[in-house]
Image (cartoon, rainbow, N blue to C red; front, side, top):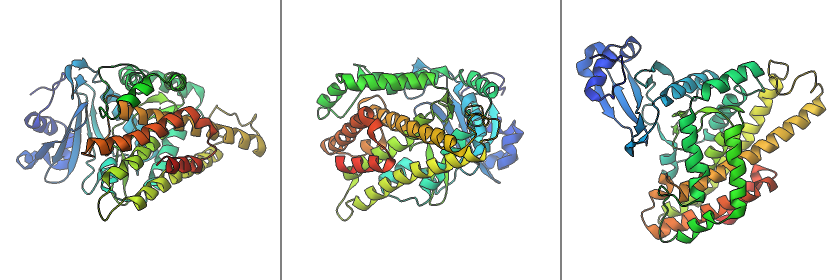
Length: 419
């Protein structure tokens, strides 16, 4: 079978592909192809995902389709997203090798990535949060990943020539950026056939979002920032479903939405999804486990994640202040006082950007097209709606009033007050 043009793979043809690709076959002993165990596990909206286990190893094959898988060929989607995912996995993997799975092989024609299989007991972080599992290194690992990937792909580290080259390269991921623009910044604020919510309980709440002028002013500003601010190579979809965890491992996956965009979009997406997990906990409480202690762990994790990120990002900046980065030239920002002023202003703005984007991501997960399992797994509609309503009210407040918060600790206090 020839693989010289795009062909959607199935479990049978994948065996032939692996045997013909030394970078893959050498990892799993595919010369003994009779022993290969292949399982298609793609539960996402867009792609095929195969787990392949051979006599001497295992790997994951991910193939992008030229349409949105969960909808079908009626919603076309470029398979070039696989190129941006593979490129970002490699770039971010070089910067944060402990927290990004290794890429073994990329085939642009086949829109196919072969990478490390994150073996059990790795699970999706979102599922762990629903189950009420504490992860002692989560804040440490995620703050480290975000600090390194965002700092080292920004103008704080690169010169403007290198930065503009990267912007040009990632401009090609326009279709997935446009998808984000639609589902995060547009659809929840208008009547759209794609929107859904827990009806009838949230009918009035969804309508209120569509009629809130102050909210629309803020989301317009954030949409402009998303489209216009080329700040760093961001993951672009960094929610709790894009992180796999064990008690001592944290791995970030699925950066197919990556582009050179605002840092706060990644930070906000991640923190916003932790806040959603917090508000969902009451729906998962049961006799003998009211989830109150777990809710406090989530709040501590939110606070620790930002504070550790802030500390590490500034440390990287200090270590590289005399390097090639052209955002703040060393002979202008040439004493400790002016550099500290610049850093404090930068991080102040970044916190507020992150809170805004986090709030926008929360709103779209409650009244937009794509929801989260944290809420969806609460079977009773009324119970689910109560949790969602609290999260939605908090998100609306955060979006409109984010600039008043002087620290992440104040945000955490506001979350507790809302609940």
